[in-house]
Structure formats: structure tokens, C-alpha cells
Image (cartoon, rainbow, N blue to C red; front, side, top):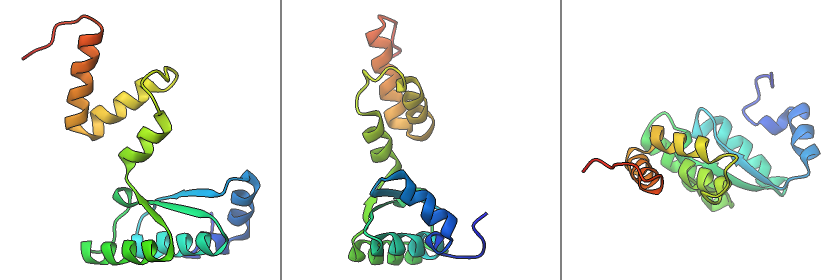
Length: 132
């Protein structure tokens, strides 16, 4: 547990764990854009990390508050991304067979349009019948 800090980096154990990875890019999401996500992202930027915030995997008290927090983050240097762009970047290619089944499941569950396309494409590739 990180305690009552809105900024996760204010907890030494968290900051040390992130530093120990040796990575310089952070991918953040959380419960409230204007609270812990904003504070942790700003601290990450101050520490020299490249911060990417998954803007459709976090929300604010209202849409206006969320948008204002995202705008502040962008102005400070954070990069807004979406869950689909992150998932696609991590997957990289449909030829990455070790993870493609999970990727396709994620798309089918959370992106109905893309999920239908992938099911159609998969059926065509396997020679199966496709409903019109």
C-alpha cells in the first residue's frame, strides 16, 4: 500500500521500484484524472520520465474536470494515449502468436466494431463460412 499520497512518487518504495526497472517511459492510468493520475504524472515528468497517460482508462469527477486535467498534463509534456493504441503497440503484429489470442479477445470484448472485423477476418483466414 502506498499510503495517503496523491503522488505515488512521494512514496519511496514506489519511486525506488520504478527507478529499479531502468525504464524511462511510464504508462499511467488510475481512478481520477485530476487526482492521483495528475499528481503522479507531473512528478514523473519532473523526474525526467516520458509519461504517457491512457486517457480513456481514467476519468474525472466530470468530463470537464477530466478534460482540464488532460490538457494540463499535455501542456506539461505528458503524451495522451488510448487503450487501443497501447494494446496495438504492445501486440505489434498479428504474427506475434504468443499474445495474439489475448489481443483478439481484448478487441472482441472492448471494441465491438474492431472485434467484429477481426472475427470476420479470422473466419476468412481459416476458410470458415462467414455470415453476411
